[in-house]
Length: 589
Image 1 (tube, rainbow, N blue to C red):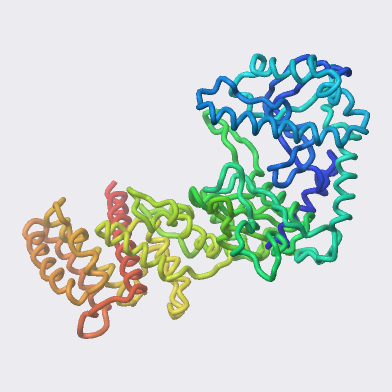
Image 2 (cartoon, helix red, strand yellow):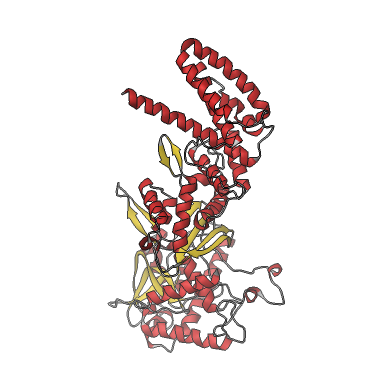
């Protein structure tokens, strides 16, 4: 997994080299305040602006270190808010911390004093302090609003467009120093990713990945050793991973790109929102990122979030017709990674490696397996709807949806079965909600049954299947008819057949259906006195289903798989009745 992320990082760098210098010594940072000075180091003004990205010195593990020419107000000016309403002891602690950070910043600057371009900034701090740093310290709270003071400050010479830290001589000096240090510390350790010893394997943090769901705002680490218990063989910290500095930086850059890549789009009302290109959200704590080796577009993945009937039909037609143009002649590798934040770390939930061609084929199979008829129309629920259907809709636990969604994502992409516990969860919710078999739940049950290795080759359809002779499925259909008979006899009631008997009927049919059949005969007698023709139709429908059941006795219990077939049979029969009634209304018109 990390090897493929490193390879992606290399490709991303190659794309960017035409526009800017890309190197391990550099990192993209944001800047939102320019400290404008003249060539003699005199402070002129602060210029706040909207954040922009800039290439600056890369600093791993910021504590105890300083970045050259670009940093926060504490580092650049030693600034801290004296007006803050806090205790004296705390103020003193904050002041000392700011002074220490500022000292490190100036020390870093002095270490590069041989570079001519840094001369004005050295004057600002040393030979021209009164009109330089001291004046800037006084003017900072006056010129920069409190809400803008958390941004990075960069230096700019009056009249010049390029910031000092962006000048080629500065960039080259940073790179040269970094490469010299790398050569000195390279040693004889081979990297476990690239297999080389060109770069050192060091006990330093690899870097933080931002925007990880449920993670820290400062970022999360994929590889980290912060306790002795995580170490072994006498190795210290990140020496245990044996990942060189170059590969570490590459995989961190890749993950940050995957988590953030996208574009802003405007909706119909003109309101702008961000659309991610390589990321799918399942829940508040779980996301999937994906990419391909040859940058192929896999737009069909959007159908998992917003299944459009026409687009799904195009996908099914193209795949099942073997459209070479659509499937592609030369396969492209596809990778997907499911992850969550776990405090300061990343929890990897899943890793998938396949081809783009196979993903399209598997997606077509997915939609075939989950499609159901709802209100006389074909329906393909979104993946997140299916994931949430296993939980209480009124008090949803997003964490449960995240775990379920991760498994459904793999099932969709890799065409694999889903575990029995998901069926157990969705059936548990149906029973708890007194037989509420929603379209999403029916789709999830249908998916499980169609991918169950013990199903015996039978394929469950999207609508009622009169050829299905499975006992549990037939009993589910019978239960729907019994519910319908009660409704025609009594109308709306406080406790319907479904609410009172669904759980026992799908679990222990031998106990429930004897009583249900007795009730149905009383209900049919009532209907017969009011609408004889309707009573005949309902009785005929009930008897037709009962005649298909094999065996002289009712089954005592249903296994979980059979309970799923019962729920699906119930759902199909209910929708069949709706379609039949709608067709009758159309004929009457």
